[in-house]
Image (cartoon, rainbow, N blue to C red):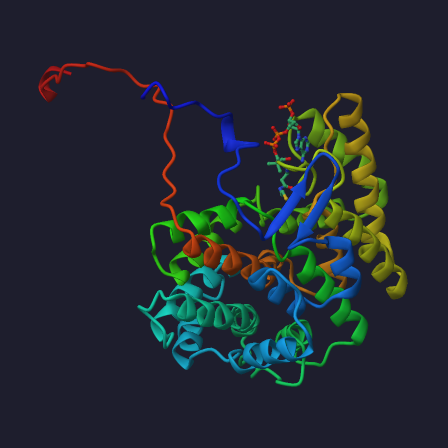
Length: 382
Ligand code: COA
């Protein structure tokens, strides 16, 4: 290693890898900002489509611009018949994130701008991908359940259309709004693992589909997007309030992590969790059963209490209360991570466009810990 190279801490914590104007996080204060707007402003007032525009353009759209984006997204919701055929050929028990990764990769063959990496073509691909990831996720679920994928409904918003394509019925307004807020909250998160994976791939000037396929792979892991599914599996395993304390105690005593708690950047409450906590409680109350919220809340109380005593400031993250929220919206557990992608595709594409606009190959160094100057020993003498 050259003398000028320095070793960073494990996992590149707190390393600023590149400038970006898309998203800001203050991990100490629990602040999340997209393009200048606090996440609470956006969750309370905007729609997912407006946020997509904001992430791609650095400002909120006016009415005409928003309508134009809506129309473009709607017109690109359909996916090629060949990709539906491919989804039908997947094993029925394929993990939906694996199916999504493969289907998105295959989409590139059919993109009319395939092979064109100009800014205009990349923007068109970003629109198609943002529209089509939702269609693919719904199609994967329907096909594995022996149903035909539904054609998108042009009159519905992105959130409502996704729920329609998944469940085969128009969602209630409250369901649409809850899902739309979940999409807004998950849309971007600075240089998280999947976004960074997308930027690393884009940095080689590989195309947008290659970058997004990398991102989906990174999102699937249980330490990243996969955590929301693990949270729900844990809640189902616990099953009722009287089992919570014993379950959590056993896990913590065994030195195991409780999924959905802790964050690499936030040292205080993840502001997205604040929102999802109230959504989970509100949906439970409306449905007349707050069991999943109550169990989640008790787990949080125990873990946060114990960790605070040990001076480890960990709190619930975005995945903790999204699990019970999605469950109460009737979404199958193994679709939680694909649904994360339905939203995060907007942030991934924004970051890839930003990376292309000011590209520098991302190529860090390693700290070599191996041996040096060994002499080759013929194989029969080793
Ligand atoms: N449950 C119990 N203890 C936890 C914990 C959890 N979910 N998350 C962190 N800790 C503890 C660790 O064991 C560690 O203790 P130690 O210092 O005694 O080893 C300490 O808190 C710091 O955790 P660490 O894993 O080193 O922090 P990190 O910044 O590297 O990790 C995560 C961040 C997200 C990987 C980690 O909190 C985690 O694995 N959480 C569960 C998975 C999850 O929800 N991921 C989604 C993130 S949005």
